[in-house]
Length: 472
Ligand SMILES: [Zn+2]
Image 1: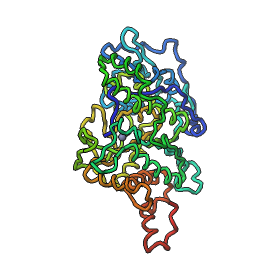
Image 2: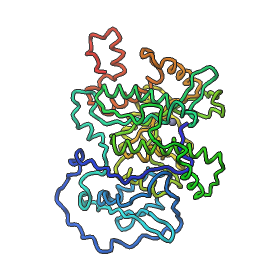
Image 3: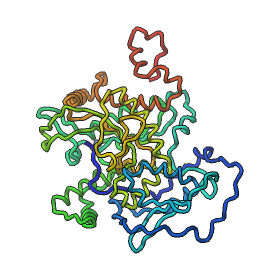
Image 4: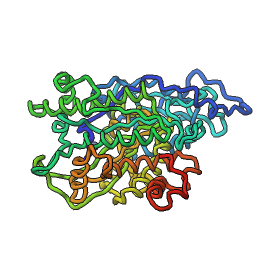
């Protein structure tokens, strides 16, 4: 059971995200320059005031958005192209109230009420080369699949793709605070944060051996952020009254804890990812659970297991009303992140299905806070803090059901065999699904003739000498 915040989420996107080196070629399509009209002194008539909408306060623990960043994308898109890109950012048509096309410009509402204001993104005409008046490179640090596949593989199966692994949640003593652990009497504790850290370590070693560059967002069960719940008393106390929510002592404590592990922690990880790691893709590793009751010492086991993979987008009505989230989502569209997530997500979903044979999970909330994404039945869009503020393609795994009748014993088996590398567990299966997906998506075709899982078996079987030893 992954969860989002009860109310908002988010981060500040004012840090430059430029990576000129790898992306110059793509944008250098200077051909015959068509005459471009001088920008008139008054750009356009102001867009009609939207009286029906009202900004909500910005998300917790972030700065107000800096809309000037939009100018980096001036003259890059036609209206039709941009409309296509905006389809995924909101779970319904709510975005149209905030993003208004007017005189070949996109006006994004930044302020409501008496100070009504919009930020303007200039669009290009059908035949205007995109570099005119705009930047020569996309405003991003991550590289597209195409760019990555054109790198030198150095004889490896995978190109030097930069991967950030984000094992979800915290582990150890923090798992209880997060409501992310349970066990039947006498069993080992099933804590999501600890289990996905084990998966991440397995994925890391395998991907590195194949030639990828892998970075972990956390390597222990401890938080990345130095902030603790007790530091957040004032912020929490001041935030909720803005939404007419009255806090008693119990709620105050609950929110301080939630802001610590869900907001401060994710924002710290976002800084690591966006400012230091600058990966081509971030893989968020989670495990699902379904309603297991209120007693972590006697969870209800359910007769169901399934999988899904979340991509970014599908903001709700109230999320669209938060200026910082509007800008974050728009920047993902402008950078082309959604398209890249769908491409990579499809490959990773196929591999996950092939390896686990799990049934696809279906949200009943499509159109409200989720959207079905084409490409594979596992793929859904959902606006989470992590997949909105990690400013690169993010693939958010939600396989298995930890409290299912079938999976719970498999997790017990995995915990029992933590230090026994010869025993293949559900965590190895999870890791293999991720790694095989990377191979399917990034390896050159000669490595795809024999799927790696078959290669491994072959090595153990009679045919061993007929084949080259696999590079795994
Ligand atoms: Zn989770």
